[in-house]
Image 1 (cartoon, rainbow, N blue to C red):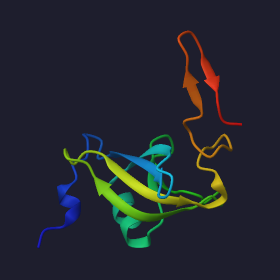
Image 2: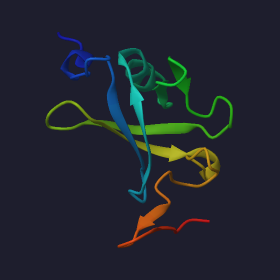
Image 3: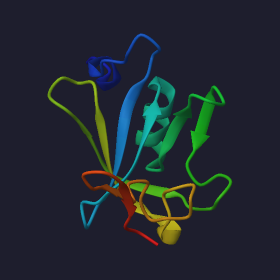
Image 4: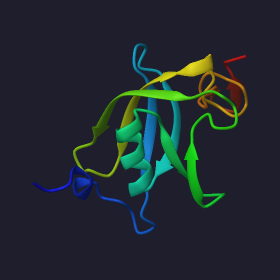
Length: 117
């Protein structure tokens, strides 16, 4: 039996984008990166583990903030190069700005509007 991780097409840096989506509402909360080890740990622990490109190390979401992500489902897209995590966001905050979602700005024709407090 082949390892399911072998199906994932990691980029030249060994990373794959991972979209964290609220498992009940479907709202996209954040996008981060995973290497093979992060994806394997996420699957084993049912807790989101990402790879921090700026710090060049594994990042267990919530290790500093306490805002952990429980993973309900992991999906791989048709090209096998994007992951979607269906998650429960503990503390209700996924973004480092203190918001529920990193996608809190809405584009208007000439400006960005902040739509989440």
